[in-house]
Image 1 (tube, rainbow, N blue to C red):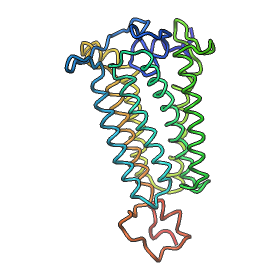
Image 2: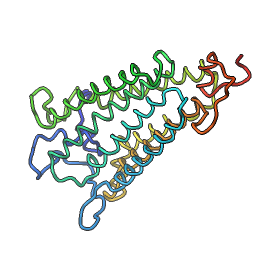
Image 3: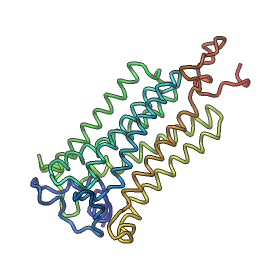
Image 4: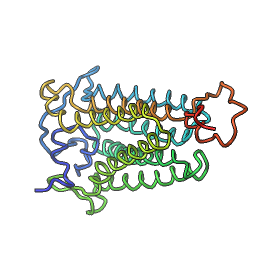
Length: 311
């Protein structure tokens, strides 16, 4: 039997932000209707249970990292796609904030939990879309940082966020019967938007950036950072969907794969930013630009690859 569209097994074996949405109860007594393979008990802090303390701490660190990278990006004033990269970082920060509540394991209200889960799922889809647009910006089809470019990011991102968020909320609260889950937690809309759409966006980003680096810039070293980011992200997904239940059983419910998914996703984002930084302008705000550089050197200079091979 095809498992396409079904979340039951995923929710049984892993801690995912989407899982609370499949419970139609609105009271505070129950936020799950299935028997998990391993119950994540986590730790108790001052008498309060925190089932996913590690992820909460790492998400806090991720938010601080986003603020630092935003500041670093702001200083690279001549970099291609600086504003667009900052939008991506902000979206990742929103994902991290939502994750604290959606998978932190300390909310007792099913209603509040579902709202944060919906925000988390919508933010994931939107963040991956914004990342794909960042790859397109690198080709300078539209001038980066302009009103047209930023409007494309914000308007399309808002459409995906609102659309995904509505489907998530309709699933969680049963506004209509369109997305009402069954015993297998089947939901084609969320399956596509939460699992397939992000993979397509990430694959598109990797392919477009690989072509840009190898064919346009003629470089190979930045590919190490790009490939490293992909590997780190993939490791995080393996921990979530494959290792999680085994880790939970081995740790007697103290931790599961969600902790390492958060960690490796953070490392992937940091590596991705380093990749972007490596192929963009190296001149910082407190360093004088070369006054002799002509406008014709725009592309090679802004790509950080201006050297003697170019006229």
